[in-house]
Amino acid sequence: MPDRLGAVYDDVEAKAPAILAAGTVPPPPVGPLELGAGYALACDVAGDLGAVTFAVVDMYPDLADGMWCLAMIYRRLDDVWVEFGEHDSTTTARPFERIAAVENSTLPWIDWHSNGPLMPHETGCLHSYFGVAPVTTTRLTVSAGGGAERDLRITRGNGAYVAVVSGRSSTLSGYGADGRLLGQFDAGQADSI
Image (cartoon, rainbow, N blue to C red):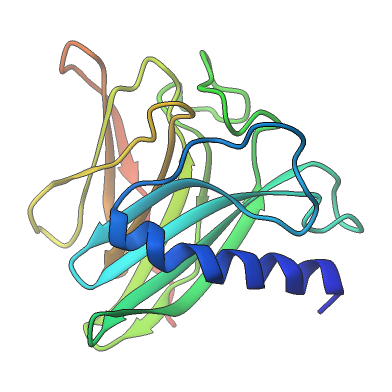
């Protein structure tokens, strides 16, 4: 692992447990962004599972310059958040601004959506995903395996969301300010582990 990538992981692993404990991300950074630093975008806590996404500048410069989103997945053991997995993908060049319209999606109600891999878990498996909700999407919900629908946090300033869900698949639903359903889709994966 290159030094820069190691610095990124050290940085986000130091920040994520406090973010999960607070249930919210800190305000966006002021000033220039540093290489090797992760800037929190969104968080999700679902029982003893949690996830935090971070914006990272040039995480993989040999692959693609620009902004990346790194999702760190956690589970709570004896009241301590322990890293369980991670995944990443490219994201908007302006991760701290709420987008007015989609830049990288065929769906008009979410953007920069990325599914993570299935991960073995004592409940069978879990999955995660992240993305950005434009200003027209004011509410996101997730439901899995016939379970209850729950709200996902949308970070107010940037529209970022992240979800960690027990099971192989889940339904992500988006709603407008008037409560109208904007769309939904299967956001998990049905692959075998």
